[in-house]
Image (cartoon, rainbow, N blue to C red):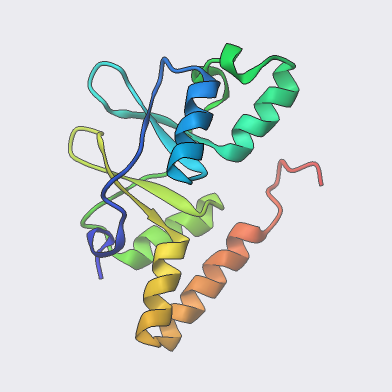
Amino acid sequence: MKVCDLMTREVVTCPENAMLGEAVRLMWDHRIGFLPVVSDGDGALVGVITDRDAALAAWLHDKPIREIPVRAVMSVQVGTCGAEAEIDEAELRMSELQVRRLPVIGDRGQVVGVISLDDVARQAAGKADAELEEEVALTLGAIAQPRANDAR
């Protein structure tokens, strides 16, 4: 199965010149916790931001979120995949990077979708596919491992 078969195609994105308050409003309005950040010029992916990033930034910067640029808090080292990639390739990438979501990128670097571990889990549950269910469990286990730079 390919990523394009499961990915969410209608993706809410955030412009790179936005302030954090705008990004949080987008997440709130669309009931999501993850936004791909795109360049103002060509719409190419330049980073991602999560609701956790926003909460931590507000505390770390000790400023109102409307005064914090998205650029200052977004993650720029972003794992991606293509729409024609196999699901197991996307799962492996999520596992390696310890992330639950991957932006799906088109030929010119533009965001064409998002694939999440939740998408894969729903597919596994719907098909009663024991092998896929085991892969999802292993990927979730890898994602849940403390990262090397975590101070926990």
